[in-house]
Image (cartoon, rainbow, N blue to C red; front, side):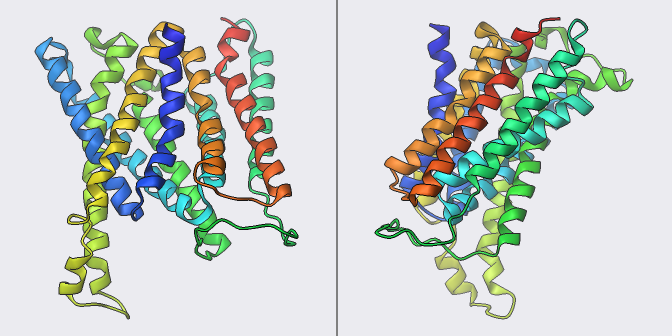
Length: 344
């Protein structure tokens, strides 16, 4: 049963980019909808915890690190939605996931001391970095762009904007750092004592599931506040600069009155179901198995982009994408199972 629960994050996070693309709208509509939906679910979880006494165990460290991690997630998600518009889900999703796996695992090893098994120190390091190399090769394969046109190739109906390569690199670089902040700040309270700081997580929050549920509400507050600020920027920024427009015209395009912003709350429900179920999966299946199961979300997202969203690719690009996808998933699963291969 718990293995099935562990597959919920894979399915939900895999379907999330497909749902958001099907509903449509600008990235600002998509991030508003996602964060609004997530906020209402998190509020329900918080009130449920309070009714059972768990909500009273918040302290300032957990609240503010969780709040900041939510801001980091929102930055990464805005730029991921922008990448979907530019490259399509089938290319952007595995690229984004692969870069996250590389940066987050390097950070975990260097700053949080992961992979330092007392029994198998060299074996776990060699295997872990071999998995990262697999992911890097996979990312390179996914990023491959066929230069010569393929005879008889029919491109997808959606017109992609022509964007400078430097701009695309910046989108993925800043977005990946945002996701790293989401991970690093969310885990920070558990590692403060490693840095010589006198802090202990309250005893009532020692359980990983309770701890994760406790973080969910302040994270959602950070997410929704940054999304609202971004929406205000998108609303008023056209009123300034060379091609400025009147406030009246800007008001007609306000994200706050566009229906897509609220239809995209469905995506917030999808995201929340994954975020909550992975906590249960890690608690009952173990962190390694739970994480590994969730990594398969990019298979669903990539294949969904190709077959549901009809993101057509030339044959050579398609082969490279599928090979790269396989390498990224393999590397992610190896990293997820390191503690199983080399127990302390």
